[in-house]
Image 1 (cartoon, rainbow, N blue to C red):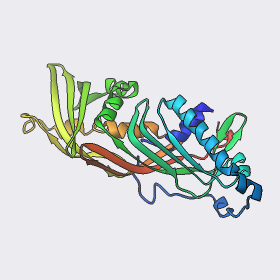
Image 2: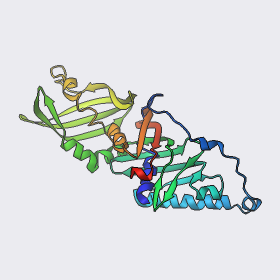
Image 3: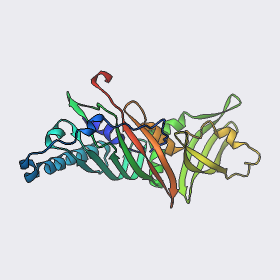
Image 4: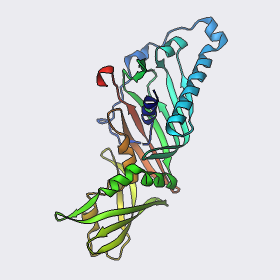
Length: 287
């Protein structure tokens, strides 16, 4: 159950999204038209629907806190108690001041379901999704978040296995990366190990969404040797791997969920992001 709750959250998240009409088509289930079911007078008077929603919200908040060690505020809108027991609900909203899970770290996170009808199936102590469940989300990536991403075991493992190939020769090895968000740019200091000794490369860039990816553009190398060495030719093949913002988003994409980034921009030293996160449809046969 807890692992599925994590999947629900990650389906809410991060990551962040790169999107166009062909790659991120949102289709809501046809059941969304069946919203005319009436409640009994007793339920309306006693407020059982409200109470049931609050109880469920508390469970969601606790599960997310236990699984991700992050504090969440949940708001669940339901049709009726009967339909909630059947796994049907109108919408779910999640908020968190700080989310940190493995290579993912984000501040002021907010996510909300997009469709007016949503459904999950709870069977044999497992949660299944009969339809894709899309969420819209927004969040901020601060310098503290960048540090959390870079220091994660997942990102460090990626760095340690990355080498730079020049004319078929693996002559450079990445050893360390320092990243800082300042003004409207991301500033990098990369420590390299070579046959001739160790040295550092400094450059700055702006994040952008292009072809459904978070990329670094307007790259400027702050080095006296930049006029002699073609750094673009050397780093183009690994630039995506050393981009912590791109890495944390791609780390979430997989069998269970998919993130699309629609907006990313640095404002006042903070990376602001928006996107769509979809929990993928699955069944017992997919297990």
